[in-house]
Image (cartoon, rainbow, N blue to C red; front, side, top):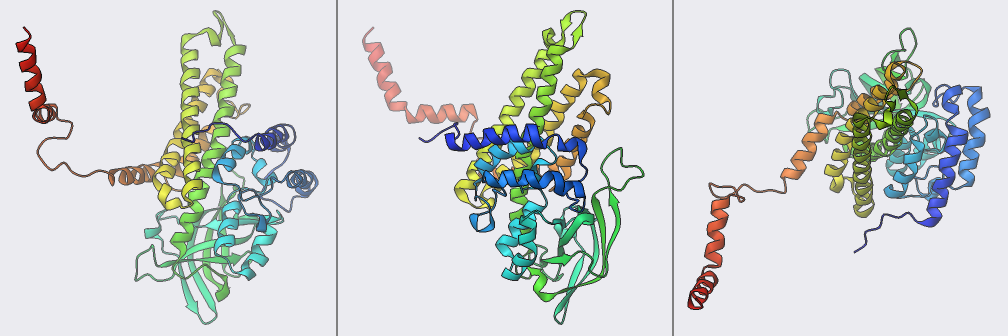
Length: 437
C-alpha cells in the first residue's frame, strides 16, 4: 500500500516560495499590464523579465519540459501542485514559462519537431522571446476534426494551405502558428490530417478579425483570431511530425492541456471560495453577519466539498498520467476532469457572487468575468457534452450484457442461486436444530 497525501518537503519549500512570489510580485501585474502575449509591449520586458529570471534561479521555469529544454521534467502531480498556485494570476503562467497555448506548442515541437524546427521556433519560444498560436477549430465545425475542410496540398517543395480557422488565440501576437489541415480527404479524418508550422507574415495568411469573449469588447479588438488561409505556401520541411499524423499529435497536446486547465481552475475556484467566506464574515445584516445564516453556511459547505472532490479527481488523474505515461490509457479520467471543471467553477463563483449582492454583479468585482470563464472552459478543448459521451463510452466498455432475462442484481434470482449453493449446509443446519429441540 502506497497511499500518500503529503508533498515532498523539498518540493513543498518551492511551492511555498511560489505561493508568496505569485501573491506579492505577480498578481499585481494583472492590474497594471495588458496582454501577456504581447511581447512588443516595452513594459513587458521591464517588469516581467526580472521576475522570470527569479523563477529560473529557483529552477521553476517551464517545469513541464525536460532538462534538455531548460525545464525540470516534472510529472503531472508536481505540475498540478504548482499550477494550483499559478492559476490565481493571468500573468503567472507567462512568468513561469508555462502559458497556453505556447506550452502545448512547445511540447509537440519538442516531441515531433525536427532539429531545425526546434532551433528556429522552439528555442525562442522557451526563452519567452516570442508567442505562438494553435490553429485548429473551424467556424462550421468547431472542434470536430471529422468536419474540417481546411486543405493542404503538396506542390513540389512546398505545401499550399487554403481554408478558414476560428478562435486561433493570440494569433495577432504570434511569431508562428501551428495549423491542422486535411492532406488526404480519401481516408479517415484521423489518418488524413497533418500539422504545419506557418511563420507570421507568410503571404496569404489573413487575420479576418480578432474576436473577444463576453461584454466589454465592443469596439475593441479581441485576442482570438479568425484566420483565412489564401494559398499560403510553406516549405515542405515545415510539416510537423509525419504526414497524416495530426490527430495523434493533437491528442498528445490536448490531453496535457486539458489537465493543466483543470489544475489552474482549482486556483480560480479557491479564489472565489475565499472571497465568499470573507464576505460571509464581513457583511452585516440585521441578524448579524451573513456567516450566521443557515443558507450561507450551506453554500460554504457545498462549495468546499465540491472543490475538494474536484481537486482529488484532478490529482488522481495526474497520478495516473505519471504512472502510465500514456494519455490514451487515462482518456476517461481526463474526460471526467474536463466535464467536471466548468460546473465546479460556475457553481462556486455563482454562490460567491450572490453573497456579494449588487457589488457581486458589478464590474468592481471579478465574478462576472469568472462566470464567463467557466463557460469558456465548458467549450474550449471540446465541449462538455463530448467529454461526457467519451467518459460514458469508456466506462461502458467494462460491462457485458446480461445473458438471461433478469439483471444480475435481481433479488429473486440471486436468492434462488444462494439457496442452491448452500442447500446442503442449510438442510444439515435445519436438521441439527430440529434434533436439539
